[in-house]
Image (cartoon, rainbow, N blue to C red; front, side, top):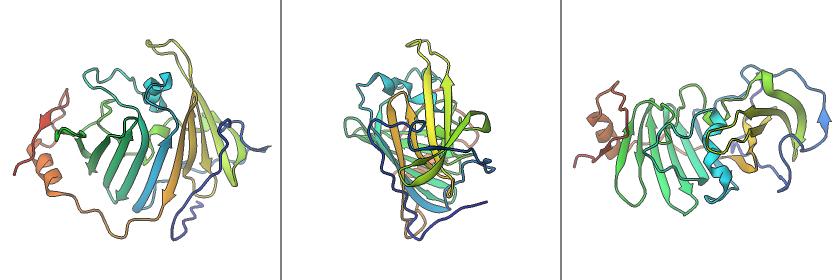
Length: 248
């Protein structure tokens, strides 16, 4: 298992605007894939996912297709389109800051699979114990990169160079949705040395993964988050998101 992490764990890739993972760099022979294909990020780590698609783009409605979930799984939520997602991992705790196209920041604390989402500008918080396809929950139970859970040996198509990085290339077609009736094409590049993602395209939506230096210390979970988690009985899976207020 080859996993190379420098002290700063920085992955920087130069990608031209018109390129996609299945067209970047010369095509080489396909070496065998490692198992697993994607490594988990280190116990203490930070990374960002930057998107090139604005909220008004028709592709923004297809983001949920990245992991095969229906975008209508939570019809009562107004799902935003994110331009950047920053993730800090500290053991089994994850802190996400998601910036949408209008500049609003959503905060999510995922603690041992239980998640609190804070809505920007409202002070409202939502406690979710299981994803169920909801935008408000990020499932880190089996991978640190759930949007890439579709990657498999069956859709491994090439071994190519992306910028200066030799990558495994994957491609998958998602069946047409009821909304637009179009096939969604997913492509992704995974660094062959670190086994971490580099870039993913979803019909023109470019998502670039960049790994930065690890946090100097483990995350400290805020008291308001712990309070909200205590109010939701463990194991209870609400059918709809519940708006709750932290105890003073």
